Length: 66
Image (tube, rainbow, N blue to C red):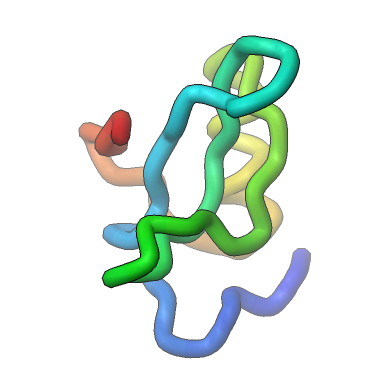
């Protein structure tokens, strides 16, 4: 279990299209820059759940795709 970055909650988690190599990344959205913090590859539902488990966050029903 890792510490959630300061000021972030589960509502800040988004999935974005990866810029290199295709696929998607999941991370904490920093506004207003639109950059992700602690981003990691996200290939399937298990990767998404692992991200929430790593930070001890409750997974919301819908995760925004940006």
